[in-house]
Image (cartoon, rainbow, N blue to C red; front, top):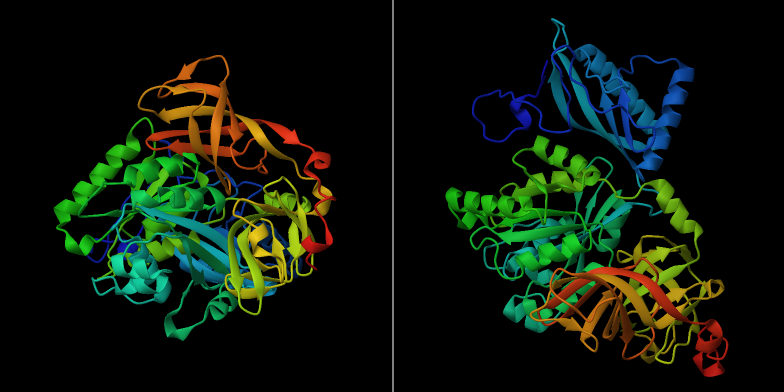
Amino acid sequence: MVVLETGKALGGGRGARQERLLLLPPVSRSANNPPYLPPEAEDGNIEYKLKLVNPSQYRFEHLVTQMKWRLQEGRGEAVYQIGVEDNGLLVGLSEEEMRASLKTLRRMAEKVGADITVLREREVDYDSDVPRKITEVLVRKVPDNQQFLDLRVAVLGNVDSGKSTLLGVLTQGELDNGRGRARLNLFRHLHEIQSGRTSSISFEILGFNSKGEVVNYSDSRTAEEICESSSKMITFIDLAGHHKYLKTTIFGLTSYCPDFAMLVVSANTGIAGTTREHLGLAMALKVPFFIVISKVDLCSKATVERTVKQLERILKQPGCNKLPLLVNSDDDAVTAAQQFAQSPNITPIFTLSSVSGENLDLLKVFLNILPPLTNSKEQEELMQQLTEFQVDEIYTVPEVGTVVGGTLSSGICREGENLVVGPTDDGKFLRLKVCSIQRNRSACRVLRAGQAATLALGPFDRSLLRKGMVMVSPEMNPTICSVFEAEIVLLFHATTFRKGFQVTVHVGNVRQTAIVEKIHGKDKLRTGEKAVVRFRFIKHPEYLKIGAKLLFREGVTKGIGHVTDLQAITTKENGLEESLGPGQLSF
């Protein structure tokens, strides 16, 4: 028994109808058993339903409650497989039964304030003369109270691979002219426009409404209108490709906590420059990544195929151990999105052009269906903790005052809340008040754990702030340290790594030079060796947590690891109360 799919969702166009075996989700078969999916899980946002034909009122209410649970698990998104039994058996439904089931599903969605979109239909051979189908349906809540689903995607890749141009095309809704017109709106500095190279971190938004349609800046929409119309938001973090700006790229990956990374590779140059380095960074920080091969309009088919093979070879190497999945059709894009979030080994590969628009829709389908990495339970647990906001950017805005940008790593932050910020150069924490909050360029009253935003601090003195600080609840009694220990792996060093060596350490939003004070159990380290190392920050103390991922570099020297121990400076020493003099208060 095999699962077949019709050719309407496939690329290639050879004949009116094509049939082939489904690659994913994994469908198990044996000689005597019909095909089936993995059994339905109690948790998660995927629900199997054999049929939903004319349910009684009591049954309908039960189904609605079940849908609410699945939507909550998927943070506003759920996937229904119609024609599948709870044990994963692919039974399928006749045309009439499927129509009635989808009608019931639509009624259920209306009851909970959601919309449904049919992702794909598949024919199933189940010992029946009548053609039987299973249908996969995306259920998405209509946004309310600004609680749209927000995913952050870091954009990596070598210089001149077309990262900013691709983002310009996705977010502006207009194709590029082949000379970089699409990227002009993304640049923040004049020298970036002149050179065409990104040197700073910029953010771009792409929305999807509850029906799965793209919402971007086309039709002269403002950022506020995009937020209002979208039930899912993709925030792209555009990072620098040039080696000269590597520290900016690492800061973007460590401090902005991206859910996914998009590695852009130019079809005509292949894997060149910083591509391998960026790939290594994403893997070291355990950020799931997918690959986009751009500029396919400039190359012959053979050149594109050579670049794809080159990437597949690298991804299959023992160091990467990934399973590449080339996306050629809508069906592949749906499959890739679902499997990508479930299995860290799957790496989808897209081949597209920002000039001709070839295969651009496949990337949009993928981003539309891509589920969040955390479920609602993990989100709730984070929200129960005390407030902690990482300061990544600092601005002065006329008539508003000092504004900080960053990510709320735990708790809830409200307008008017009193927090403490630090540590300062002498290890103190200062009180301040959050005057207003903006999320994705539109006003917001409440910020929840995992969300990125900018907070206005009114007349608070900007010179007292720096990147790498944290704003925390006064009850937290934050621990800070100058000396810490970490278990590290030395990825590369030209000679030997010894006591007294200075490196730039990246831990979350913290970026500072540290000196190696001691290597436990060894005198020196060589490439590939592991050890527990004691570091000391050379400038000022920082707020760190045990278990935090660490990345350090100095020239060609690179290493990764995690924090294992802190020599904490207590609150009495860092003087929270003493720092709150009348000149340092901002209410």
